[in-house]
Structure formats: C-alpha cells, structure tokens
Amino acid sequence: MELLLGYLLIFSARVLDVSISVVRTLLMVRGKKLQAACLGAIEVFIYISVLTKIMGQLDNIGNLIAYSLGFGTGQMVGIFIEGKMALGNVSVQVITRQDEGQLVELLREQGFGVTVVQGYGKNGIKHILNIMLKRSALRKLYTILEEYDKDAFITVLDTQNIRGGYMDRMKRK
Image 1 (cartoon, rainbow, N blue to C red):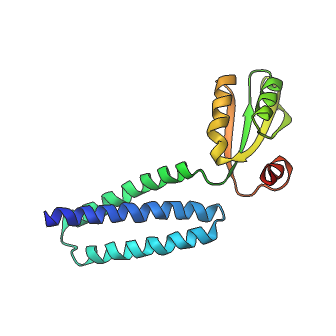
Image 2 (cartoon, helix red, strand yellow):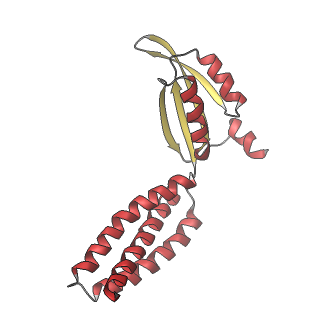
Image 3 (cartoon, rainbow, N blue to C red):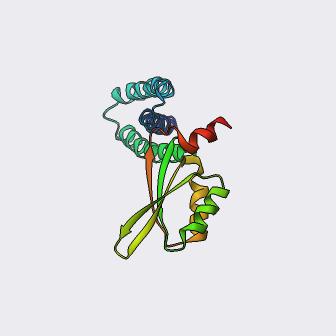
C-alpha cells in the first residue's frame, strides 16, 4: 500500500509540475512575465521535490514509470488548462463562398471588428475578412461562421500585441 501511494505521489506531482510548465511557457510567449515567473517558482519546487524522491530509488522501476507517465499526462493536462484559460489574442482570416457582405454585417452586429481586403484566388476575386479578437471569443466566432458557411476557409494565428483600431475602442468601454 505504501509503495502504491509513493507511485501515486510521484505521478500526481509530475502531472502538476508539467501542467504548470506548459501554462508557464505559454504565458511567457504571450508576454505575461510576472505570472510566468511565479508559476516557474512553484514548478521548480515541485520538480525538485519529486526528483529527490526518484534519485534515491533509481532501481525502483515503478518510480520511473510513475514519473514518465506523470510527465506525459502533465503535457495533456497543461494544454487542456491553457485552452480553457484562452489567454491572448488571435488574428483570424476568413474566405467565404457565400456573399461576404451579409457575414461582415452579422459579425459587426455581434461586436467583432472586421476589415475586408480584396484578393485574387484560383476562381477570381475573393474577399478576405480580417478579424482580430481575444482568444476567449474564438468559439463564438466559430459558431457564427459555421452557421453562415460550413465551407469557409479559416486561418487562425496567435497575435502577441494588438494596438489601435477597433480593439482599442473595445478595451476602453
């Protein structure tokens, strides 16, 4: 029983520290330095605690398996947590097969800032809708786009900073 609890402790601690590592890394990339530094301190404390337990018992294959499985599981949990946090901004480009005028009006009515640019594709002139938004609003945008045109071509890019334009006015409200 004590052996099983040891494995569970190693696994759980590793899931926790790797999850924190994933979120910390994504916070750093998005410019959230203070939050990333705080999470880094917690992460290292947990990591060193687990590593100390493992290093004293390298001949115990169960410890190594629990450590490895905790790492892999921690990656998945960290990505899930970060997805739920939906931090940062994204740039979305949409090319629809439908009349884009109606979609632009619909998106603007829903509070999205949309800039339309004319492009030339294989089948002639296309209009590219550029939309900058908080990542947390991406699901709402997808829902609107899915209802309007299931075959729309959509690209989403992480955007570190947005300054000026419609997003600035939204922040001030």
